Image (cartoon, rainbow, N blue to C red; front, side, top):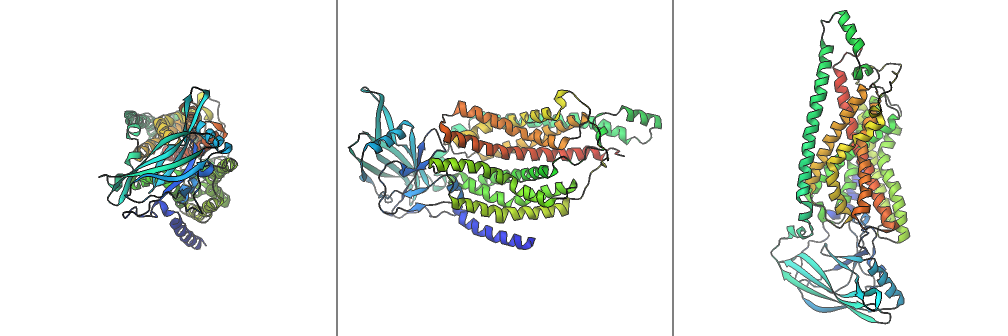
Length: 590
């Protein structure tokens, strides 16, 4: 059965990959002959300050193309990103200049004037595409008017498009809005356009460079933050090595003495305290083992997934394609599901778990269904508002099929392999029958405080990068510095492991052997600080408004922080698990 499932999943994945691969294999070769038609695609409009609140371009009363205009559907990521490209039917031919062409005549009535005025007051912008290159502009402008306190609403009626080309390929497009006309019911406005073609020596491979904000992303503060985080890693790893290894070496030396007389040995045992006293309970299975196994397995998968996507983004410049990052993330998530099953199944079996089917189902569905729950609420809001952010039913079916026929079977296979290959118990110390009572300690050694404090340093290591990520996602900037992201991600992993090990050591020294969940939450609390920062960012750094945008901002951020928390928690737990096994391997547990 597993082999059939794998073959079926691979066959289905091959089909879906071809269906979704518009980000890899372009529909066009981007080469034109003289006078060959060039399509100008209209995409979406929306309030400039609300990036996710976007609508179909023709929700505003612009002139609609005649007949049934062509639609361009990209890959899965493009649809999830809220893109719907429609042929504008504007007559554009390669290398042919147009001084002034008529798009249409727009007859204004009271309803149309009101729609345009509302759009202008909310700073509506629009997005076009030509040869996969974006063009942006504002619908109109609110100008001061001596006769009115509210100002005068003007609509831009002329679009001046400048196209730079290199031989037979389009390199750059630029749109300038001209001829503002006042909005008055009963008037007829001529909507016009002009096309100018300019030859350039810029190569096709560098045509997206103009969209990259080098001064912003490669600012000195960005380099300084990387250096600062790197120094934190050196200091933290050195501190952990010096303090912990020195302490443990003394403990090992005492246990390694074989020529002690009985009196000395008894005195040493009576004076023992801290982590050595809980050797009979430290490997006791944690509460809610099935949930802990699921989140640790999912977190291990997410860690590998993020690393893989970052590397693919560095190699393949995924920022160029619309929705390419999202498509890559979904496909890679499905393929890496084997890792979550393997880690979860092995951990569950090593701790004596019996209900492995429940563990496997929870591992395969935990994170996707959390995202589905948040996405369902956001999608309902988007449908109510009639926004392009609403995910079509067909797209939901495709995503579900990917999960059901690729991700789920691979998680099942990983669980079976994990149980059989790494599921044998290998604890260095035998677990005692009766649990040892946990003495009361000072407040700062309680699991809750250790968990909350554990996320501070990891958050500090990624704080600056979070600003750049949030700004690129919510402020129309193309994030392209994935080399920075790779370094920050590796630094986050190292800092998280070191901090969690220190927290685990302090907890065990307090004779508290419930380290499994504490180590997870200690690392996962990084996501809590990221979410708190997102609240600050929303109110201080953005001008977002309205229920729609607020819901999407905090909904997407919650989805991101859940993934980050599970990832960091799993890394912290796995690092602490290795540490605990290492220190108890060299002591006499009997």
